[in-house]
Image 1 (spheres, each protein chain N blue to C red):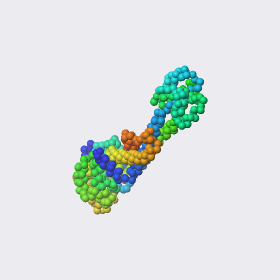
Image 2: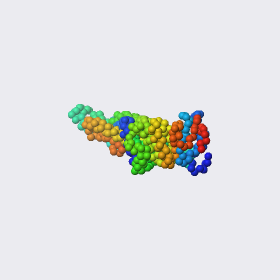
Image 3: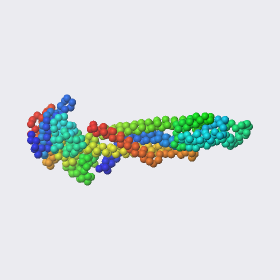
Image 4: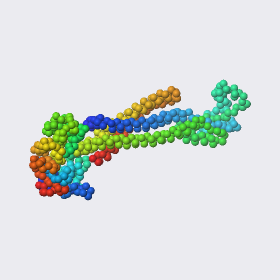
Length: 294
Length: 227
């Protein structure tokens, strides 16, 4: 019976080529739009994670903090929640580093009467605490230590960037859901068009003793096949576009620091199954309506 | 009316069919026996087609009880309706063939729906098409055939599932005299082979040619005692 249903489904797809093509293109477009967002987020998340790994909190001490107090402050900071490691950087060490960094211009520093740099602590955080809320929280707690003049976490702009990305991510999820719902309805309506054009045929099938299953199953198979075709076309178009874009980006920006990647096989499989589900759901919704009215 | 008659195939008890406040059939009591050839006749709008529709559940009765081959139609579940319809072969005035399917595919549909195997289907279609004289047209599409040919295909489809009952709604209504005579001959032949046939028609000549009991409907009421 199943092979008979498949035969009917394939024959009907061939017979209603134009309307079915519209359904397939609709599903393909939904896959392209939704998956573009997902792809963007997957890659930006990876970049953010990489950047966040480099986050250090720098705590600068007042110039008049006596040397014997330093280890006490270091202990205090080490005891704060989320701190992995605290390294003391003396003003002399910082001055040496600055000299090295300035290289040729280092002679400018020689005219200074005294070292203007403060003593500082470099604080590394444990991985699970590298969210912006926790970084900010820790920074403010360090700031509340009286001997600390200033706290800096250099890549502060990352917080803002991360915030914007999160807004994008949320709108991406919403758009993704909207597009999926829209494609279900478009597919449902396209299928309804096919069904209305074949209403007489369905009515005749009912009259000659065809069960609901006998009528519905080929349509369900058609929906699943259309979903699979739409999903495959969508992924191919997305992959081609992705390759042409990243081949340019790779040379200029990424340079090995991070790798922009396409979906893994398992995610592609999920996308394909989702589009098949969309195709089936479109058929299911329309058939439910049509069979009731025949 | 004898309720226990073993020969009885269809029984209708006080059946009404209403469309809103308007009634199409009033208090229909009718019994059809096995291997009977019966005509439902009367002027247009008398309720002939409606009466046939009630038998294959194209429409439900508004009131009353209908028994078809032991099945009470007022109690049948939606899932069981296809099984009822497989007991009934229906011939329509407008043929109701699927234009996108060949003659073979149109007839195969009935047998596929009943879950018959492929080989049986091929054999059966060959034999019913031979019976209606259309064996050379099995790959043709309905619209390439004449009205008479289409009706013969519709008859082949109606008998393909070996139904207990054949219902024909104005089977010669849209045919020329020669085609009508062929269709009449075919119905007669299937009756001789043992089918119970109910024909709704207003064609008196058709009735006189075939002979059999005629039930006269007027404004939805049976005008003379049916048996």
